Image 1 (cartoon, one colour):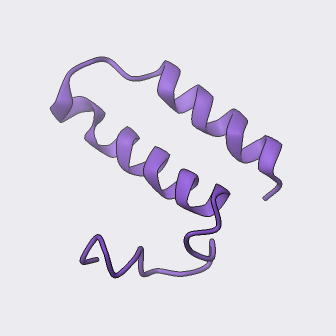
Image 2: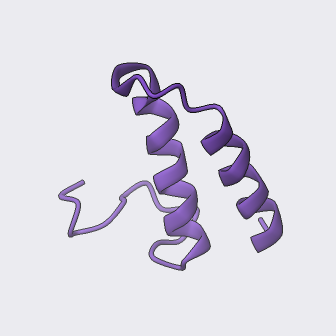
Length: 55
């Protein structure tokens, strides 16, 4: 996925946040995963997030 597409998807997800932590948890997780892919923290095909997260 190219950087512009990742950034667009992140912005769309951020716009859908409600402010309710319980409702937004899944959206925030998707945003976090996309930002890690965008920043090169992990390969997009990796099922493991990172050592620092303990995942």
